[in-house]
Length: 91
Image 1 (cartoon, one colour):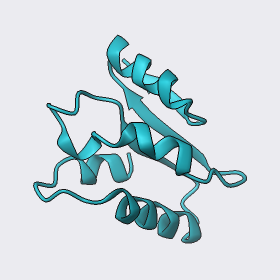
Image 2 (image 1 turned 135 degrees about the vertical axis):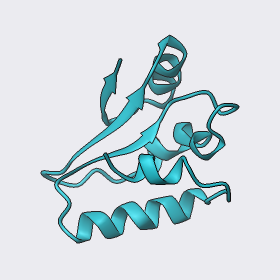
Image 3 (image 1 turned 90 degrees about the vertical axis):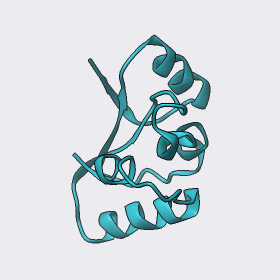
């Protein structure tokens, strides 16, 4: 669980910078692991439409384990295209 769960259920669009600020704050608070984003269809979950842009700019810092939800082959293709450094989890 992590920011992905809360963010994807919001109706208001949250900017990439605001998402990054939230996750940085969680890291500073000492959260050791979190599922940050999801590579789902942007049409199905608009809040995760910027997952492709998130990976290249997210600073992975020592020790913490961050993951992303990759539910299908299309999501895996988007993940590979983003050259994610996250540990991916899928169904």
